[in-house]
Length: 133
Image: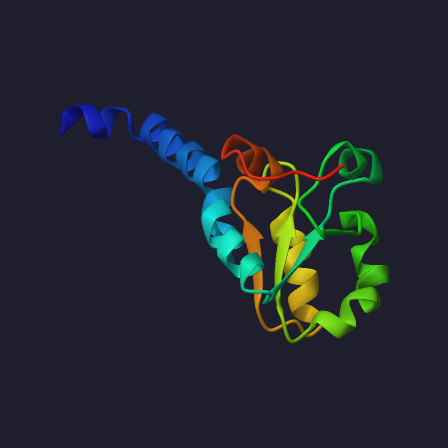
């Protein structure tokens, strides 16, 4: 107990820095889908894949039948996806980090079921699932 009282400021700094490291993981809200779960949605024909990577990364390889709208253009081009609002939107990026911001944009645009591919295209490839060029 004496140690804690003598070093209260160091302990407080350690707790705050730990909280700062955990904050991004705790604030990522929304539905996530593993590559296997996304595959089930795609195979049932109830999903639209929105790839938010830039055009070069998309051209290098993407999920079959994915629509490419880069994350920085999604707010302006979300109207291109209006006909798919009644389907599940699977948002994909390279590793799954940028997809959450894009998912929020789609939800604000009226999409009721938005899912982020956990691990992005990298996880998809790791599982040996098909990529189209």
